[in-house]
Length: 635
Picture 1 (cartoon, rainbow, N blue to C red):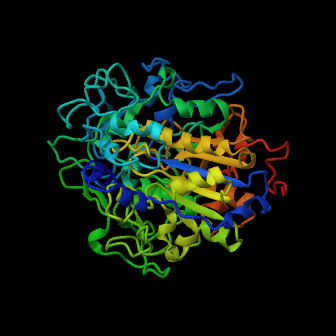
Picture 2: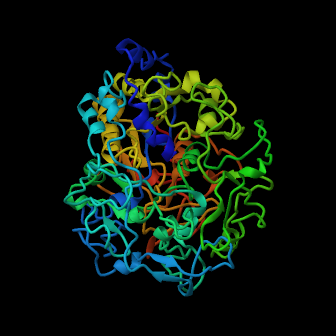
Picture 3: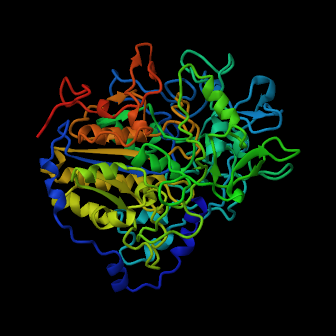
């Protein structure tokens, strides 16, 4: 996905488009009014409309490292509260809790490993220098030359596409905008400083399945496990993995210490999300659903499960042997993967990379069903979905269509209106300058066999969302995904662009006062992007969960600056929709079957009934009985 997004700069250079053609390609569809009945549908809460806004690739500590709750009655788990860093971003007394290590000898007999003990690793003397990773000028600056710019942002925010370039003559090597870039201590560091503003393009870092399993360094032994951390994930191999999985001996790694970067809210970074956290409810225990990237993590928002390779009619088949992933290290290397491909069969412990994960899951202090169906191959990396946005078959190499039920299917079966609003959907496939920045791997419904039939009623551009918000024609359930220029993804976007996108939607929603009184907006990201996070990780199956990511609920029913500690992930959104609209479950194996977490008074972050995933009702205060499983029947 990173290569696709960095191509933005080249696409935006093609500005020979007439105003009339651009207006036609980005025109807003007329609505049929079918969603007007959303307010009359029975719900388990006063919420009649829910929107989830999904940005890209930022962990919780990466954004909220120094956040302090507005109320003294609230607490947050982050680098500041754990005394890992101080409010000024410098190391604090517990900085060693976030120390990063390099593996010095093979922990698993020369095979892929997911953990390392003290005998196999040593502390970095300094963090591998964070690099530029190919970032130089503003990759989306060409948007400023288009008539009207990108319609996914208001005119007042269009200037953001042209700011944030490095100002450096080079795009490789250490990012010298970072203070003391070559002598950073081996742990988290503040990204921003005198020469690195918040409004800056910075490098991406690796965020794929096998790499992330290694980065979090999980094991069930006395070196890893504590009462606060019963699953034994130390998060201490972040930089080691980024510098070894793809680098030949003696080679120069290009994806290094940036995984440990964090922003500093105490110094004005992330201002809009900070304001939302101050005023509404935030979770500091919400996680990316799987260990991996955008595609697998976005799929969970629709299925609470993972898709697989099949015949296009719901039956599992075996992909070509040349596409099977092999993370075992090459001969004479410690961690240079043999073959970074697409698929893995986690039901077979003899397959490369599988046994170490199965062994770890089998030792957990609770029982985990792997959800690795026999003979099924699941994707380790981002792979295009079965269909193009226009409903035509994707080119060869895409994930064949699946017949799994999605949350969209359950909603449609009960005639409950829903829509997926994707940035630049209207221009996708038109050949115009903004073509190519719609995120196809982000739309879970494009993986379904019945996607072409869904399009007319359920697929829209974000510009249509803006109109539905203004006109009071919002469906019951909405997904809002910005395009690749404004989704906040490192290297191809900036987080202030995503903040501007989210702010526009929230302000439009609040501007329609009658509709707003029954609306809730969730603000989150797809996954953590490989950035460090210090939070507890609860495996619920072979695929995850993974590190924490931000989640804020914005609603008249979530005011007050509360911070919830209930364990959640993207399947929690599916559970919320199911519970609020009385839908039932997706399948016998999907994660929406997991119970809501029960907390220990001494440790709110670790459910006592693992595996367990919340349904997000804890983020609202409807009435004193709002947490009952059956809810109340609001009409």
